[in-house]
Image 1: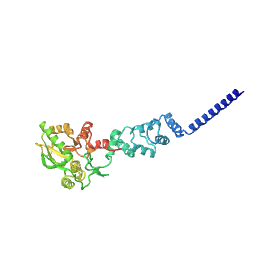
Image 2: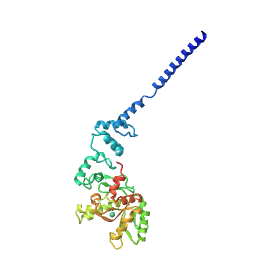
Image 3: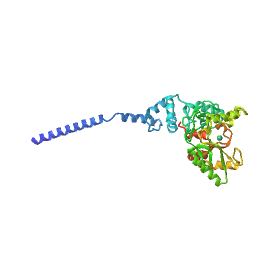
Image 4: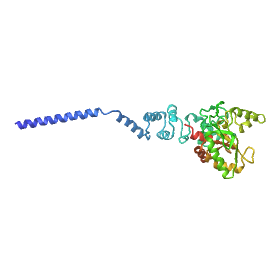
Length: 331
Ligand SMILES: [Zn+2]
């Protein structure tokens, strides 16, 4: 009888232990964070609709916002694959628009869609090119919407008919060119310019700089002098208005051949086209680009931007204005 009782007690104890274990396990399960399974279902819902999950804070809610605006899963995938965070923020706060022409254009700016479309239609050019040109304000008249340059001492500064240097800007590091002591350029460019002169000489190309740094006041005098003989429309094709000349940066040089008064011979220009980038210089106003640069061809005008950038501009075969917008501007 005693043995039976002990057995019974053991069974009861076993049951109690099992109940206790059950309670403990349930408590552990109850205390598991609830958020995880819920957010997983949100993501799963998106995945089921064909949306690729992006590792970005608030992606789930952003994707849902875009779905509500009427963007398809495919469009949402493209937006997150190609668009900058800046553009995504604008897309999230505006009505749905057709972005299909813009996904793969790295310098696209959501705020300018209407201008891109209008300009592409009026010019009959590819959208990629239209985006760059509109970013450069080329759908507006030269010398309108002028912005004052904030970093005039940068070697990659863009000075053109829409970007003006402050009138009182003088580079702090102007130095004389050792082999032409009467002419000054920015210190950053001087060694590379001497190297260019030496390399040219080895190829029997004699390069003579004749106009380098020019102050705002000097440029003003020059521009006004031209106005005495030519109309403003004409002058604007070959001379910069004060504040709009690269010469004020100390990074531009006009160079000539010994046989010419203010230009290069064809063969010296050929040498320059093929070699100047190796020393950080580009032909700033190349042939056939006046629509973009606003100037007629100027074979004599060199601009220093450093070897790395000059090499890229040379390889791409584009103007510095375009390069600046595509590669040096955050969009
Ligand atoms: Zn020049």
